[in-house]
Length: 165
Image 1 (cartoon, rainbow, N blue to C red):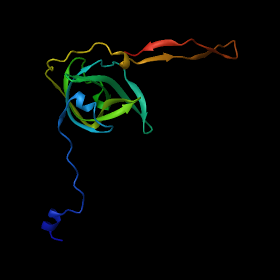
Image 2: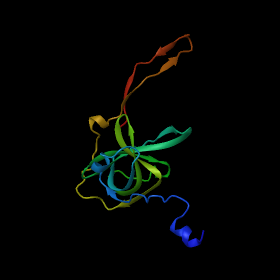
Image 3: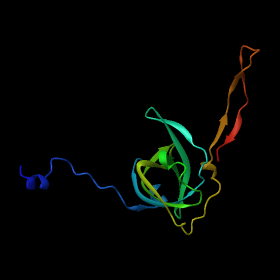
Image 4: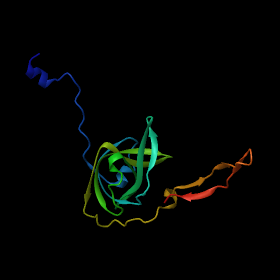
């Protein structure tokens, strides 16, 4: 096979180029799971100061949650690794190479290893949300037991409401 023949028909499959089209939050909310998002311009709101450590494929990984908002809507966004701590609440960013995921039947966005995030001038017309709506509240009950040294049975502590917003 000559070089010219090889270049015309290489012995491997061509890879589709990454989607670089700009999406809105409303368009993303209509997309299926695990769909790559080329570009999203959005304002970060409700950035949680704390992070969580979760297990992903057996490894412990740190994750931070916020919301990305544009004039068409708002969607939950999970930040991983180097992206944690690089955002400011109320600032606008250009996100590339995000992906859609679903948890408890709610679609959200997540950064990927190829994600890039650049701060941009504040977007006009986007009201920065200060509180989550009822369906976005993270309300959980914290329960626990305590073994008293003088007793041989655990004491059940009453549940305490905990709101993570």
